[in-house]
Length: 154
Image 1: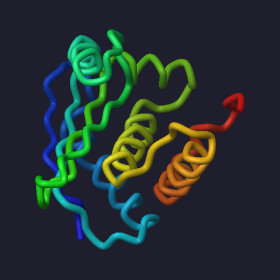
Image 2 (image 1 turned 45 degrees about the horizontal axis):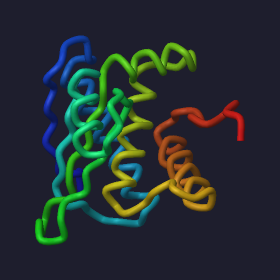
Image 3 (image 1 turned 60 degrees about the vertical axis):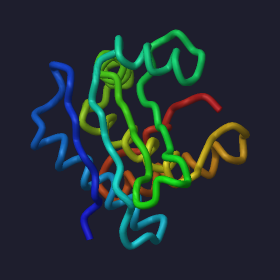
Image 4 (image 1 turned 45 degrees about the vertical axis):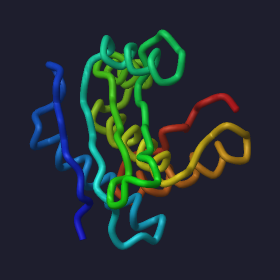
């Protein structure tokens, strides 16, 4: 079953919507497979710019800076809705360039990362981070995307 999400693009310079839709469906389907979940509640994917990400990060996390991805799990009372994932265009593109990876691969990674947050995973402790990174690696490997943490310093 295909994942159920709304795709909103409210900033310029992202890849075309059909390409974003394709990569997001692949990334989420792979995450569902590795989590052994047959289907998912609905969620929203927002592709925005760094200005909006800075505002969201400041409002909800008291961090007045732009970031690559934010995940906002829904309240337990929002039955059938997982929450929202937002990606910031300038930061995502800059990070992809710094890592010398295709932007679309970095987008897939961040979508998986955000989706795992909506499923209750986090990376506040070293053990949580290792578990989450392992799941991300496995989900991305299933769609032929290289380990996003390869070469990172531990």
